[in-house]
Image 1: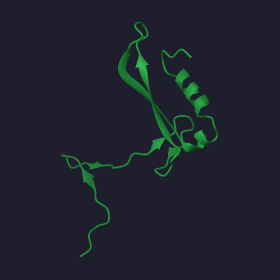
Image 2 (image 1 turned 180 degrees about the vertical axis):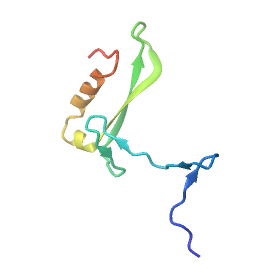
Image 3 (image 1 turned 90 degrees about the horizontal axis):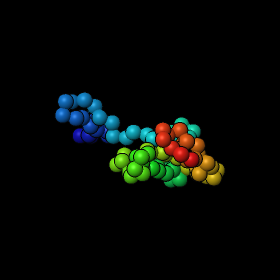
Length: 89
C-alpha cells in the first residue's frame, strides 16, 4: 500500500499547524524563497534611551538576495532603522 505523500501537523487541540512560514523582505516586501541563498536576516538590539543598556528585545529585518545583489542592503537597513521608534541615525 502507498502512504500519503504529505502529512498534516496538528497541535494538541487538533488544529492544523503550518511547517513553513515564508519570510518577506523588509524593504521590498517580496517573498523570500526557500532557495534564495543571498537572503539574510539581521537582528538589531533595542537599547534603553536613558541608560543606553540593551533591553533584551530586538528588531528583526530580513533582506532578499535581490536587494543584496544590487548593493542596496546598507541603504535599505539605514532607511528601515529610521522608522524604528527611538532610533537616532
